[in-house]
Amino acid sequence: MIHIDSAFDSGNIKVERCGGPQDIVLTIHKDAASDFYQWFHFRLSGARGQACSIRITGLNGSAYPGGWPGYRACMSADRQQWHRAPTEFDAKSDGGTLTITLTPDADQVWLAYFAPYSLERHHDLIARIAACPGVRADVLGRSIDGRPIDRLVIGDGPATLWLYGRQHPGESMAEWWMDGALARLTDAGDPVARKLRQLATIHVVPNMNPDGSVRGHLRTNAAGVNLNREWAAPSIEKSPEVLCVRDAMDAVGCDIAMDVHGDEAIPQVFIAGFEGIPSITERQLALLGGFKTRLARISPDFQTAKGYPKARPGTANLAMSTNQLAERFGCLAMTLEMPFKDNDDLPCADFGWSPARSQHLGRDCLAAMLETLIDDLGGLMG
Image 1 (cartoon, rainbow, N blue to C red):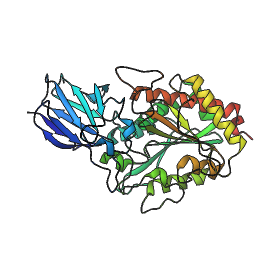
Image 2: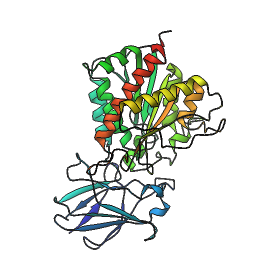
Image 3: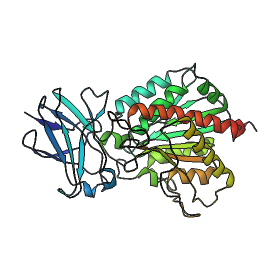
Image 4: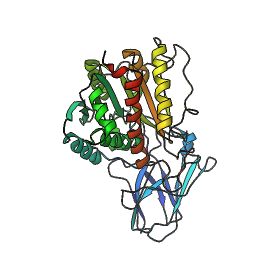
């Protein structure tokens, strides 16, 4: 008998009907106390060798309906390697229907909006990196549900770098990026990492929203709050995750900050800047342009032609972290976006955008940061 279940870390699906392999109809639960929904993660059991058609309906009302055309679901039989499944979207069927077709060759298969990065894997990451020589680990604060907001500190140079991700918990590619960046930062034989550790003190918060991650949310924390709209005035009641990180930034300063995200609709990797902040300087703009040029040279997965529209002068939303930090510290702050779909500039039929590509991009971003420190910031040696 075929079963669908999602009662596990980051699971999210509601079974509307499961009448057989060609009659599986599902919907996605909304984030708690909000109207956001898009992330799904569930297990299909008992369908080995059967041609299955899984329909997820009601998607025209999802957070980003523009994310469904051209999208292919992620699937895995071992929860280690995630391939892309044949997927089609019909906006005119049942309020917008995503149809996933597959014939499992195993008794159980997992399907997800993107390859999950579980809280257990997060704890393994923290333990593994914290055990490396020269790494300091601490807890900046607690989430609404009481989970730790972990920070890793690497290097002892004069520049201060902040890398943080998963403000939006469904954007799990952000923590895969962190995984790759941290692996490079702690590689004793990597010359980029060695030099970066000499020139900078790097503060890394791999997961700012552990509650939403576990709950299977797309965009919010346990209170239904979008953390990336809390940076102007975070509170202990609604957004303690942002409050503790911003307080830590105030304590040590910030020269370069990167907020790592995923974008549902745009099938490219790009950076959003801070062009609309009130006190923007030519120096900040030059740093931003220089970093993007370097990253485009280093990584064929990155491009600068497509992305979000730039805010008009003086109109930036200072409740968003990149704008708030650029305004607050006069620093280079960036929002890195990776696709949920594939990177259309360098497509991969089997995997689309993937954990491995996210990890490689994390490594490449460090190389671009090092060049920026040396060439444009003089290592901040005075």
